[in-house]
Image 1 (tube, rainbow, N blue to C red):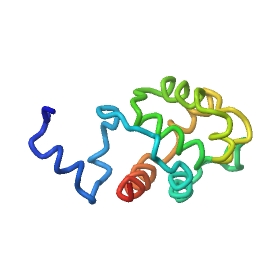
Image 2 (cartoon, rainbow, N blue to C red; image 1 turned 180 degrees about the vertical axis):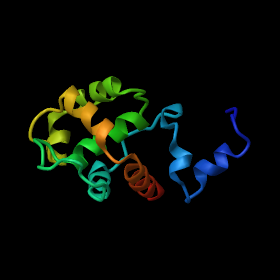
Image 3 (cartoon, helix red, strand yellow; image 1 turned 90 degrees about the horizontal axis):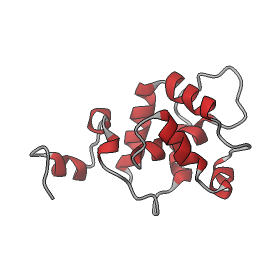
Length: 129
């Protein structure tokens, strides 16, 4: 395996990931077989909700599946939404979804969520995995 940066492999092995270490997550694909989406959802409950009233689906659940979609290679909102759309309803229901995720909701969440807080919480979760 050829490294693009001299210290890339060491940084990936490091337990001290920072948001700047994950600015381009689509460069590597993640296997979700052993991921605990429930623990990611719980960690993302700490991200401030920009909505005045809770929507049809809980924000932490939406953020969790969109983050994993990006980590698995989605490069834009439409790809992330399509990835989530292909998940089984049981997985989505277990995360707290009450109805399927619409593209409009995915776009709003990806546009209006506090990216700094999201990056921080995602990095904290990744440290544990």
